[in-house]
Amino acid sequence: MAGKGLFIVLEGIDGSGKDTHLKLLARELRELGYAVVETAEPSRGRVGTFLKGYAKRKERLPAESEAFLYASDRFEHLKNVVKPALRRDQIVISARYYYSSMAYQGAVGVDLDWIREMNRFALKPDLAILLDILPEYSLHRLKRRRSIYEDSDYLRKVRDIYIKLVNQGELVKVDADRPKRVVQGELLSMVLNSLHERAPENEQEKSETQ
Ligand SMILES: Nc1ncnc2c1ncn2[C@@H]1O[C@H](COP(=O)(O)OP(=O)(O)O)[C@@H](O)[C@H]1O
Ligand SMILES: [Mg+2]
Image (tube, rainbow, N blue to C red; front, top):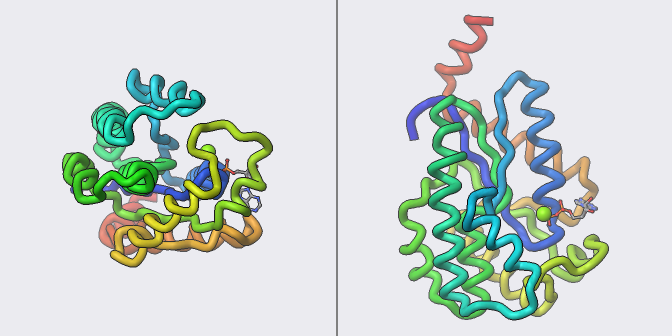
């Protein structure tokens, strides 16, 4: 990916702290002078809006159909939100991305390679982080059950796939079962490292123009 933008993804099971840390990260990065776009999957697009309603229903579609729908929403999300922001050299932070498809549909038994192949169009993020926590703790944080996915046996399988992706080097794990302040500190330093690694010459430009 060319340009000065940075694409960051936060992954994790329901209640792991994705939305909480996304907001905090965006605020801290803005205070440091970066332009940040906060986004999430399912997106605000037409398929994404359908998927948000769908997740509140009791009956699930075949997991393969879910995988197609999430991939379709992802295509729109990339085209309409992520890529334009990166072209404007902004930092994009998304709660969930194709790792969620692998974990949530994979946990129903869909072949991971098939899901990966379906998502081949999806830009690889610069930094993809797993907020890791056991379902018994994360579900405790959620005041009430809000989606068809919030079941601890199911989420255990979801987490197993996330851990597999960590072991394959696709996600970087952060222990999310610690105070917010501690988790947040670790996330910010990871993001700052990526920013510095990506574009030392751009940092120089930035300080020259300030
Ligand atoms: N490190 C933490 N310790 C305790 N509670 C947390 C922590 N991180 C998030 N929470 C709380 O857990 C709940 C779920 O967090 P949220 O960010 O909505 O998770 P997600 O978006 O991953 O489902 C919220 O009430 C949030 O305030
Ligand atoms: Mg959330």
